[in-house]
Length: 194
Ligand SMILES: Nc1ncnc2c1ncn2[C@@H]1O[C@H](COP(=O)(O)OP(=O)(O)OP(=O)(O)O)[C@@H](O)[C@H]1O
Ligand SMILES: [Mg+2]
Image 1 (tube, protein in one colour):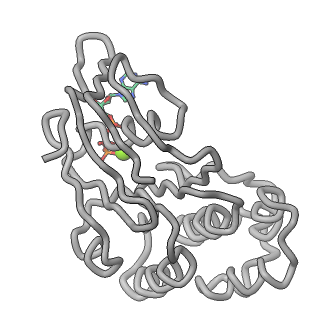
Image 2 (image 1 turned 45 degrees about the vertical axis):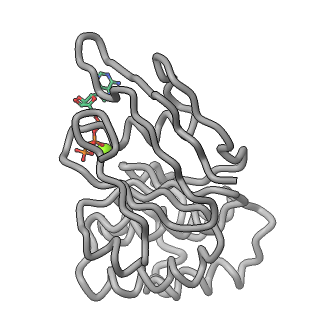
């Protein structure tokens, strides 16, 4: 079922972030959430993920099993790329994890401690971890941050291949990313979806 967001309001003190926001997020497809910095995109994701509580309004039909790439990576820095993915889903075979890391250009970095990886390499580890988690919905907050154009193309292809029929809610500032993913675009401005 589609996710229904009704009259959602959220303030931080006097700062009204979401103002009677209404939206429908379609099941089984990619929705890109766009909009200026500081308008509340991450806040909306945090409410949908259950990490923040709205002041009023409702959300319906959000799947229980969620996976996410947060705006920050939230990786275990002293563990390898491989181990970060394995501990998030220990039913995965070693071969699967290695194959996915290869697909995003990290075949040689699988055994490397995350603290020794570049920003863009860490971002890809966080993405593979979320894609390979057990989930019915995937939240991605600027997942391509720090990636060069060629890597972005490879990672877009990776996402398309591995998220078919998954509900994905992705924050991006780049309309080209949204188009190459064939996503539905929602624009957040003045606390509402335009
Ligand atoms: N925990 C918090 N306490 C107080 N204010 C907060 C908190 N979290 C976010 N805000 C404020 O809410 C507003 C929206 O923040 P949010 O992170 O949702 O924006 P965003 O659209 O994701 O921006 P960006 O594109 O820069 O990531 C900002 O003004 C921010 O300062
Ligand atoms: Mg944000």
